[in-house]
Image (cartoon, rainbow, N blue to C red; front, side, top):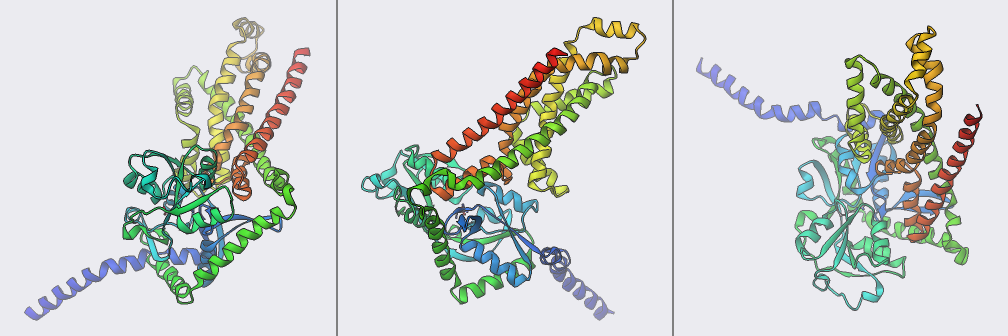
Length: 491
Ligand code: ARG
C-alpha cells in the first residue's frame, strides 16, 4: 500500500515538473505559424547602414544590409518567403508584441530591459559605440567628456538614448526617430554629436565628407553590447531555429561576407547616383519616390474624406436627433475624437485594434484618418445646417412636407452651400495631416521623403521638394473647390 502511495506521489511530482515544459510544447506555435503561412515577416528600421538601409539599385528601391542577409538566411533555413517591413525603431517592439511582425532584426541590442517584454536569439554581432561629429569639430571633440553640456543626438528608443542619459547626464539630449534626421540635425548645427553603433558610424562617415567619427569611450553593460534577433515572448521553437541559423552564420564567419556585401551595395547605390556627375545630387533622380509617395497621399486623403463625409453626415443627423439615445453617443464620439491626437488614433488602430484583427498599415491609416475626419465633418455639416434659417423648415413643414423631406430637399441643399468652403478646408487639412500615417510605415509622401533623405544624404532639398508637392496638391484642390463654389452661387 505504502509503495503504491509513494509511486503515485512520485509520479505526481514528476508530472508537475514536466507539465510546464509540456505546456510550452503544447502552446508554442511560433514556428508552425510561420511555416503554415509560408512567410517570415521581419521588422527593421532601415536607417542604419551597414545593418539595414535603403539602396537605389538599378533604379529600384531595396532594403539591404547585414541584417537583411541574416534575415534571408533564417527564412531560407525555415523554407519560407521573407518579407521586410521598415518601421520606426521605437515602434519595432510594439509591432512585435501585437504580431505585426514575426521577428525583429534591426541591430537591436539584447538588453535586459528589453528581455522583460521580448525574447532574444543568440547575439550575432558586437559593434561598439562611437560618436559622430562634423569634421571641423573633430579636433575640438575627442572624447565624450569633451561634449560635456553640449547637445547630443540619439535615436528614440535605442540603448544609445539610455547611454546618453546615464553617462552624459549634463548634456542635453535630442531623441529623433530616424537616424537620417539625426544626421541632418548634426549637419545643420542643431546638435554637436550623435551616439551611434560603431559600424554604422563608419558607414555614414565613409559615404559622407561632411561627417567624422571617433570612439566614444562608453562603458556598456554586457547585455547591451551585442545585436540579436528579437521574437515574441515564449517562442522557444522559433528561437531554437533562429539560433541554428546563427550558429551556421558564426561557424562560417558569414557576417564578414554580409558586411562586405553591404559596403559594396552602399557604394553601388551611391555610385549610381554620382555616375551622372553633379546632376546626381539633384532631386530629379528620386522622382519615382516622390511620385509613389504622392500617389499614396492622394489615395489616403481621397478615401478618408469620402468615408469621413459619410460618417460625418450620419453623425450630424444623429447629433440633431431629438432622441437622447441617438444624439448623446454621436456627441461623445465627436468630443472624444477631437480631444485626442490623430497620431495616437493612428497608432491605436494599427497596434491595439490590430491586435484583435490584423489590419494592414495602409488600411489602418485610412480607417484612422476617416474616423478622425468624420468627427470634424460632422461639426461642419451640423453648423452648416443650423445656419439655414428656421423659417425655411417652418415653411416647408407648413406646405405639408415631412421632417425628412424638408431636410432632404430644402435644408440640406442650402446647407451644403454654406458648408462647402469649410468642407474644402477639411479636405486640405486631411491631405496635410494624413502624413502622420508614415509612423506606422505607410509609404506616403513623408515616408518617401525620409527614404530620399537617407539615399541622397541630403536633408534640405528633399524637404523643399515635398513642400512644393504638398502645395501643388492643396492649391489645385483649392482652385477646384472654388470653381464648384462659384457654380453653386449661380444656382
Ligand atoms: N543597438 C542599438 C539598440 O539596440 C541601436 C540600434 C538601432 N537600429 C536601427 N536599425 N536604427 O538600441
